[in-house]
Length: 163
Image (tube, rainbow, N blue to C red; front, side, top):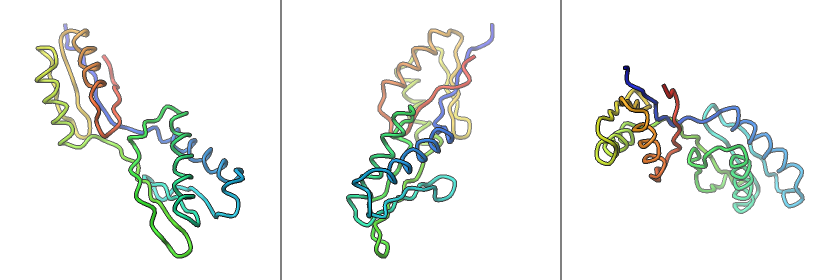
């Protein structure tokens, strides 16, 4: 019998993020409290979002609207890496980087957790920006998933390629 396995990844659903961004932009243009503040939210390259408004608190409010929309679309807020509001001419801007992938240090942390606290016979291998977990028993893999979900990492965790 071959080993069963799954991958632990940290990926974002770009389509869902784009939809959340569009909804947030639409809400910002329609809401009364954003009228006349020059508030806007838009893509800034492939993996970043730029928020601007005429005051720090308005820019922060736009960020909160964006977070609301992400949560409604089942996206983890851990994918966001928002900067502090910074002045830019007459505007206040916030750059939000979108985090994707598991760093090698984080992968090592998860691997150590699985070795120390996981069921015996479970192997974890780092493969680029993801972690492959394999075992003879599927029940052990499910136990590992529960163990990893219970941890509070500073990045979003998904399980893919379950075989």
